[in-house]
Image (cartoon, rainbow, N blue to C red; front, side):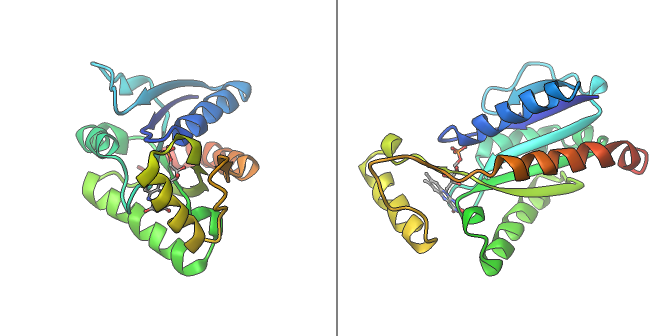
Length: 184
Ligand SMILES: Cc1cc2nc3c(=O)[nH]c(=O)nc-3n(C[C@H](O)[C@H](O)[C@H](O)COP(=O)(O)O)c2cc1C
C-alpha cells in the first residue's frame, strides 16, 4: 500500500515519530509519501494514496497552525481515504483518565475545525527537550512536567514515546484499512 504521512512539529519529536513510521512501513513492504505540513509540496498527488497517517504535537491545548491549515485545505481528498491520527503530547505519558479525556477533546476539536475525521486515533507520549528550550520555555515545561509527574531534571532531555505501542497501532490501522476503505 502507499501511505501519506502528514505531520507538523515544533520541537522535533513528532518528526522523529513520523520518520519511525516511515521506516516501519518500508520494513513491512509499504511505500510512503512524507509531507511536512509546515513546508507543503506544491502538488499533493492524493490519487496514488491508499491511506493517510496524520501526526501533530499538542502545544498549549491545540495542534500547530500549519497542520490544521494543510488538513483543512485538503480535507476532501483526505476524507476519501481511511485516515489515522496520532496526537503527540506530554499528557499521554501520564495516562490519567481525566487528562486522557481532555486529550480526546483536543483531537475532536482538530477534526471539527478541519473537517477531517480519522477512523483511528492514537495518543502517543512525546518528549521533554529541556536542553533545547529557552529559559522561559524550560521554566514553563518544568512546571507542566511537575504537574504530570514527569521528570523535572532540566539538565537532560526525556523521551516518553512507547515505540512498541505505536507499532501496534500502525499494525491495526494497516490491517483494518482494506475493509474500511470500501465504506468511506
Ligand atoms: C510550549 C509547549 C507547550 C506544550 N503544551 C502542551 C499541552 O498543552 N499539553 C500536553 O500534553 N503537552 C504539551 N506540551 C508537550 C509536547 O506536546 C511534547 O513536548 C511533544 O513531544 C512536542 O512535540 P514536538 O517535539 O513534535 O513539537 C507542550 C510543549 C511545549 C514546548
